[in-house]
Length: 229
Image (cartoon, rainbow, N blue to C red; front, side, top):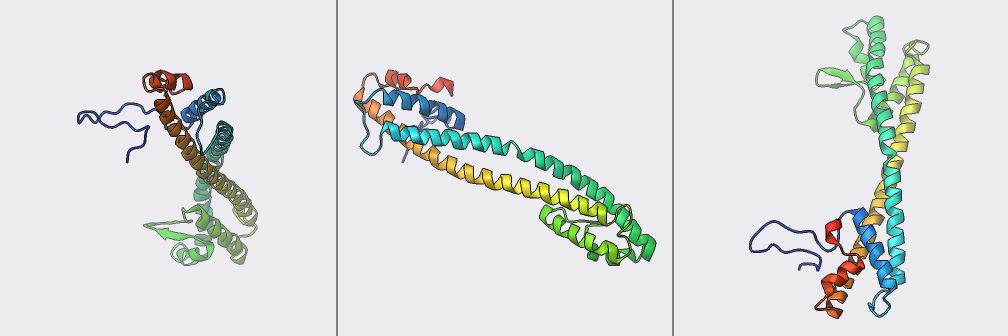
């Protein structure tokens, strides 16, 4: 069944026009606030299952969730960028560890020790896992194996790789925390969005019922101005 704000195709034409209720979050917020203000000043028009004050609370929560979502999501690229640079450094510095092994055990035998250092074979290359959670685990193996094979005090030894892992884990955890917060806020935002659209649809029908001849003008007065979204 088609909802009141959907636009059916006309005469088989697949081109659609803008609906009465915007889809974009920002546009929906702006329209909802305009409608809310108009409804609060028009007490004669009522819905049995909700009221303008309750609608205001939903709008306030939606605006807050939208702002937090935008602010939190904006920090994700900072950690992603740091991790990307550190991944490049890890890939380059790992060559030194492989060199240490080749110098101590010969180049031909060195790969036999790679697994103890968290190094895996991908196609024809020996690398640390690309998956970042697995890479963090591999760094732990690498750090633990360095002193066992006499590389602990080397330039790319225990101190260096411990520092790398400390930063890597910190930025990985921060990125994960951002993702979790964003996911939660998106869920909240989407649920509030459904509630807002439900009220707006009901109010559109209310305006059509009360102003059968002039409802289009009334809708514009209430804030349903499709040309703005």
